[in-house]
Amino acid sequence: RYVRLVISRLHASPEEIKQHPRFSELKNFYGIEDQKPLIGATGGPQAISSGFLSITLKCVGASMGEKQPMTKKLPATITVKLAS
Image (cartoon, rainbow, N blue to C red; front, top):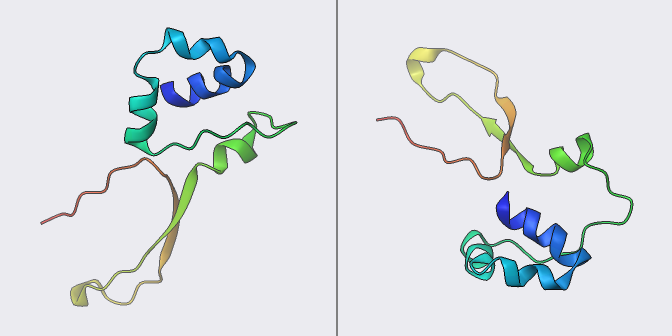
């Protein structure tokens, strides 16, 4: 969120980068592109939903019986851990 906040302020005022010395390092670490915000873009549902990925989960356990695949929307920044 910090990097995106600085990017949004950077387009309004290029001098903003001087107040954030770790900005470039964090932007590269998280792989965030330096793009200008869309003209007329609001912070509404469309902007929020663009940060989500559609994931389809399919049960493959024999003891679970036949279950339909389930599709969920998750944030792109989520960390998934495998259960052992």
